[in-house]
Length: 95
Image (cartoon, rainbow, N blue to C red; front, side, top):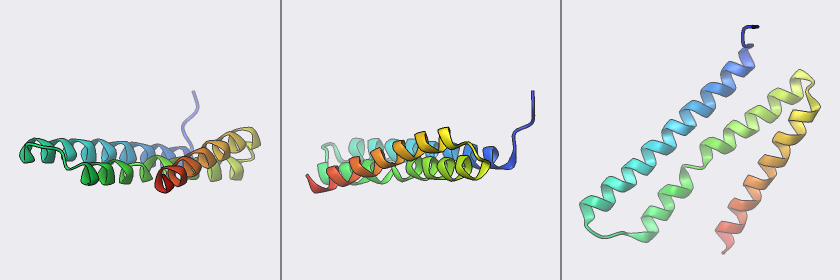
């Protein structure tokens, strides 16, 4: 088995820390919810939306890494996923 290259390690770190950050935000929201005794819908929605920046950054980094390494198929797939994420955020913000 070959050793992971530096780009793969960078992508893995971005995805790992993005995932851990999202978990921390969700847990923080649950703590606030329990402490308040009732949901503050706007604040909970704001926290949940902010946690999604990590996956977007991970997908963008993957797309660039795949493109630079010459893997056009996976770069295209990453680009499509990135476009879907951005579109979903735009639609959620508009509606």
